[in-house]
Each structure stands twice: as structure tokens, then as C-alpha cells.
Image 1 (tube, rainbow, N blue to C red):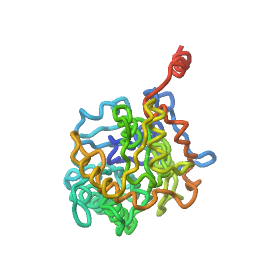
Image 2: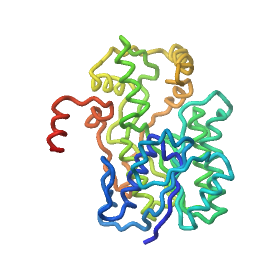
Image 3: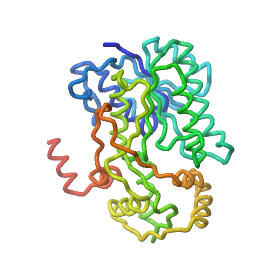
Image 4: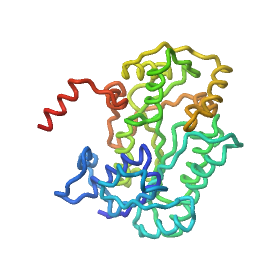
Length: 344
């Protein structure tokens, strides 16, 4: 069994925080106290891992923004991963048996051909640089987060950039594994929580691409799939599509979010031209884009799997509707009482 130091790029993000928590649980020594709600993780039943975590390094642009990760036995490093010298030092710290997990992704960028500069930097240039740096330092193992529908000739800048980044990984000589999730939900997500907030204040929801189809998967399931793949050599040179057990239209997801949040609103389906006008306005929302024309372009292709999630990953994706109260942070009095009784 190999002890592997791990560099998690994008570890302070939505998915990355969950990945770090599970890696930390595996790396923890017996008897070590872990912060709640982290529990000691388990590998796929009946399978021994090919490698286990050693040091876990997580670079971040600003340490002040990752206080939620401080209780974990993780080495948080203030660093710019887009700087070659910095990335070189981080890879050198791993050793040849190290592992790199790349979770970097952005949802919005300004227009460009074939994609904007932000997408080019985060989704394409960074994976290429990681591949080159891994080869330079003899680091073989690379786990890479792509996206369902990623394709160099895809309909949106997001999907084209994700496709080019994925190609840089899969064409390399490294021991790579690629993950391609549908939309990911969980507490603090930027998808279901957005629609829930909209319905709290708006009398109705104007909705473009109402028939777009998604197969949402829980952030906990995505994180566990990544951690299980890290310890399983069978996943090398494999691309895994990730999705939940049920397919929903965008309109169905909006209605579910409103009902679970306690503020169901009517949905007004928008024709394509009005939808693009709405998205163009939301690109300039205070605090950053809420929706973009590129998001609508991504919805031109169904975001669904063509089969079940691979059993090699050792996960059973949970149902969205059973998790909605937790996802939206809305818990009734009886649920709170149950938790208090468990702590008593």
C-alpha cells in the first residue's frame, strides 16, 4: 500500500471542501479527533486501497477565506496556482509518489472565441501546466474534474474550454482519471439555492430553457467518488460520468426548490429571444453574474448520463428530493429537536 502526498488544486471551493474533508478522514490516525461533521471515511467494501493519503496540501489565494478548513489536518498554503514558479514548488513538495487533484472551475466569463480568457486560464491552461509539471517532477497520478457534456466543439464556451482541458489530461502519459458530473447540488450551491432565493422575493420566475434536462448529483457523492478513485488503480485512464438517480427538467428543479424553501412561485416560460435578453441583463448583476448567455448555450444539450454511474467508484447517488431541506438550509422544528435529542 502506497502512502501518497496529495495536492488539491481548487480545494477551497464548493466541491473541494468536501474532498478535503474526506481525504483528511482517511489520513487521520486511529483515535485522532476529527471536526464535526467529518466522519472517518471507508473504502469500497471488500477492496483495499492501492494508495492512502500522506500530506494533504491545499493552495488558496487568500487564507482568510478558508477558515472553515482550518480544523482539518490539511496544509493550507496561500499561493497562486497560475504562477509557474509557485506551481513548480508545490509539485516538488509531493515526491514522485504524489497525487494531484484538480478541481478548478468557473461558471462565467466574458465572451471570446472559442472561449473567454477566464475559461482559457482556468479550464485549459491550468490542466496543461499541471500535466507538464507532473511530468517534470515524476508525479504520475492526476485526478481531473471536467464536466458532463465537455467537448471541444461544444455549444458553449464553458463546455468547449472544459473539453480542451480534459483533452490535455487524457492525451498525457500520466495515470489520469477524469470525472464529468452533471449539475452538483449541496448546501451553499449556486444552482438550487439561487432559484430558492429568487422565489423568496419574486412574485414569479421568468425561466429560459425550461425543458433543459439535468441529472443532479450530491456534492457528497461527487467527493466520495473522487476519494475512492484516488485509492483504486482500476480507475486509471478512465473517464466517469457522474449523475444522480433521476433526471429533471430545469422547470421541475425550479419548482422543487421553491416548494422546499417554502416560497413556491409560478414559473413563466420565456421564449428564446427573451431568455437571452434576461441572461444578458443577469450577466451584469451586482456581485457577479447570476446567469449568462453562455449558460443558456450549455443547456442546448441534455446534461444527463447514458447509463448508471460506474460501480467501480463505490457510490450510490442519493436522491435530490430527500436532501432538499439540507441543501437549502431550511429545517423544520421537529428536525432540530431530533438533532438536539441526539446530542443530549
